[in-house]
Amino acid sequence: MISRRTVLAMGGGLSLLPWVGRLVAQEAKQPSSGGVLRVAVYDDPRSIFSPIETGDLELTIGSKIFETLLRLKADNSFEGVLAESWKYSPDGTQYEFRLRDGIHFHDGKPLTSEDVAFSILQLGKKYNAFGSTLFANVTSADLPDAKTVVFKLTKPMPPFPFLGMLAAFGPIAPKHLYDVADILKNPQINKPVGSGPFRFKEWNRSSSIVLDRNPDFREKAQPYLDQIVFRIITDPGARAAAFEADEIDAGVNSPVSKADLKRISELPFIAVDATGNKATEGVNALEVNLRRKELSDVRVRRAISMAIDRAFICNAVYSGMAAPARGPIRSDSFLFEPALPELALNVEEANKLLDEAGYPKGADGWRFTLNIDPNGDDLNVIGEYIKQAIANIGINGNIIVSDYATHNARIYTDYDFDLSIQVISTLVDPQISVFDYYWSKAISKGRWQTNATDYRNEEMDKAIDVAESAIDADQRLAAVRQIQTIAARDLPLIPLVEYESHNVFNKRVQLGSTGPVWPLQNWADAWLEK
Image 1 (cartoon, rainbow, N blue to C red):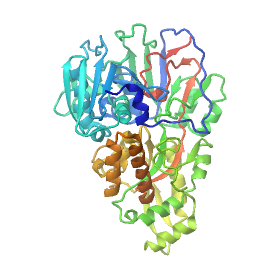
Image 2: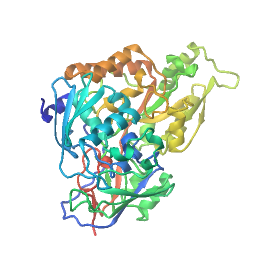
Image 3: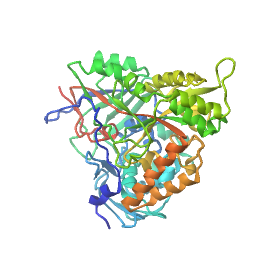
Image 4: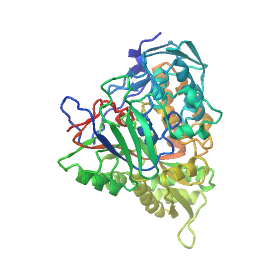
């Protein structure tokens, strides 16, 4: 068996970009108990049953209720949460976890290895958009006793993405409550029961989600907070106003616009953190529906890419807190392919490509019309810019703005879109959350954040297959870089910018442990200074 120390040789790491902003600096203080943490979120989640969810909103809330075997630390190593130890075979086909003593679900039932196996094989593998592919080769789990689970894989999987997947998308749920024929029809998913430091209390649609302190949490002094109230505020300007009026204590994953952030950060009682999302930041990109005749031509996709001024987006939308993207993997990842070309603005060449593709301008100046589906907040602003940019090459853009759930249903269930503006998040490792956008095996109607473009390419599929199972670090790096090269050539997704995500806090909020995925941690050690 390989020790956990060697994990880092198998996976990616993120370094801070040069435009990282003001950071939270907190002195070590003695925690005090009590108080209600008021957190702004941008919409109602699809559900808060995080074992089957992949969205940042769902996971931010659900991670306080449910726990995972592991979590990612600031140095990109892993520490145990439910697991006290773990090991894996040199060939990457067997992963063994030993559970901590004394873990109970909120209903008092003990958490056992049977719950772990059920959560990964029956929930994560079948219902989680990323888990359906990443856990595809996890075919069985041996349960030697109530505290030990051994996952068996039919094909190798590198340790870093496998452990990272368990840390990000492997919440453990009680089998005795959720082992039903159709989990999506189980009313218990909207009254979730986990083992985390907070218990679900109520969900007031379009208003709030309330979690109460779990008095039986295994860390007896924790959680310090009495309650967390997630306030649903759909308008980013209203969220900014709530911070200014001291009606909100915290917001994660860029709760206010970059323009508002500059103003709010100057308030004496506000702190801004630009490090707590490092493992979840990614690339904003246009998903292109290749089912549309015009968009199935790569010349059209290249023309759209050439019409976009990425530097303008960085400055006008993100106030300089972004960088032009060149591919689906961020340039601050060691997996990034440095030979990728810059995606430069070239309106003249874009118009030539469209003419060559057989789409001349009509008498009204338009070649054809495309719907543009942004996905909220900053992406809505980008959508307006994309409309203006493609107008310069004779494409008429029609903006469609919808709520979070409706947007994702249009893109991933109905495939009723032309161009969709999405956040392609790194989520610890690109194997977890990037490859599925390009893999033909990930075309799965109804699964969010997968291949909605209908992109099918045998060369790409082979490269992904190698990257998914390569244990040798050099072989994996070569495959991941090949994926980026093919993606840049074919452009089923058109990269826009690498964005910086920020968290905003009232300074009375003491974060406790932070790390690169603070919004997805359980907040048991967060507290409010009196």
